[in-house]
Image 1 (tube, one colour):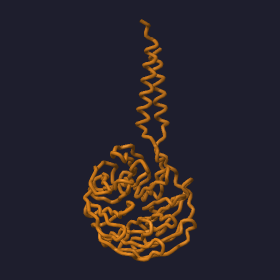
Image 2: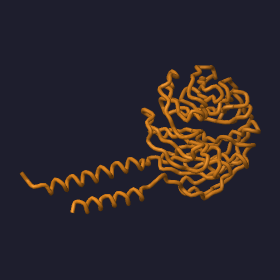
Image 3: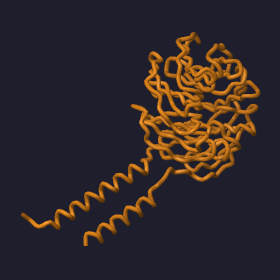
Length: 331
């Protein structure tokens, strides 16, 4: 009898494992040509489409295309400022501003040489310019030029921590911190090999290091390194979901989820081919998959299949133990 029960329990576990949900990858419902960047505007998702000089707005609910807008030459990054979508155009050395609610063009403004990333810090917008190792500061209201400041070699990404601007410098394995108020240098700090992306979690700065397949965590207050943690193959983008850090692993066609507290691995999930960008919409993680011309939608609270498996195994063992106790004679 006990053997039959064991066989039944094992069969149930196998069935449950086979039917466990994996990463929730929504099907492609709109054409996006070589999406290289992605952002959320509070309602919908936007991608920068590198090869056809456009940005596309997608419904965050069903991923259907809402509109596609022409921008400058070779858009590399797209960000939302609370009202408008800003796109940095790598080959035309400018930024394009589109009104988010209706796609109406607002303006096009000069940036630095080969702008590759953009961030918003309240009254201003900043671009990271990989062509001349600078950042450019623009007035968010009218696009007027406010200044250009030197940073590290090949600044590939940029973020704002509430007071200062940070760049991830791919060329010299460092990050640069400058004051948002006047562009003056605060400090330069070494990180992992090939920092290509950067984000802020409210307390710490994180970089994705594409050459060492790792992320580095620094205290924003003083730039000291907390630790470096392994992720997937070729992390090219990074974001914070309020609890965890996520990387888009471009060479591994997946994403990695880490605990923000200690960098511990929470899970790894498959997405499209060559995910080049990642963002969080308040409940869901999104990736832009450059080589498969798609976006992938993931459940930000997804539990690892292996954690579920451990729970099932523990439940089964407890069940068998109870049966054994009941079968043993009293006294």
